[in-house]
Length: 172
Ligand code: SF4
Image (cartoon, rainbow, N blue to C red; front, side, top):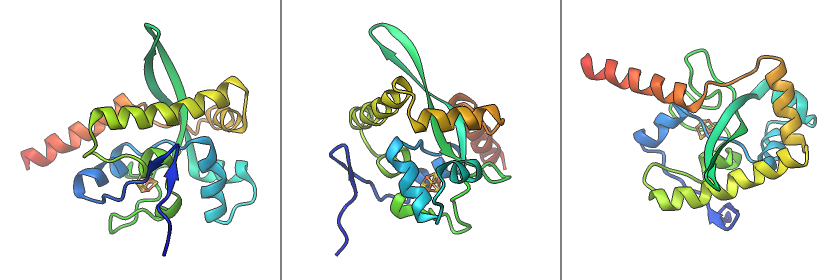
């Protein structure tokens, strides 16, 4: 029997409904530092930079408010297919790396309350902030990807692309 994956004390989610899968097509989830080795290992890479160059993008990340000030937390996210979907989304709308999918995917779904999602986000983004503060591998990989133009759309741009697609589908 397989054990439920737990991160920061939160159990992973399993929903693969159409609404949740929309995120895979438009706004894929972010990696936390421990996701790097887990996904690289699953894909057979023993070099994290080579893994990142082939599979990840540097995202502008999340904008958060703390102590009355806005902060930007840059994140690593999966690279995208030519159609904009996550590179790990299969043709039958499944995740090709489900077992080790990034924290930003595996621990969230659209059915959670805002409070639950916020609590999970705080834990994930705090781990990323710690990497930036200490100049950890996560931050250094982000800078390499960014400097080689392997960059993701901002979440605002990705949401706009999602809304445009939904509007076009509505008008058909
Ligand atoms: S890694 Fe998997 S769950 Fe996350 S966006 Fe890509 S396909 Fe979806």
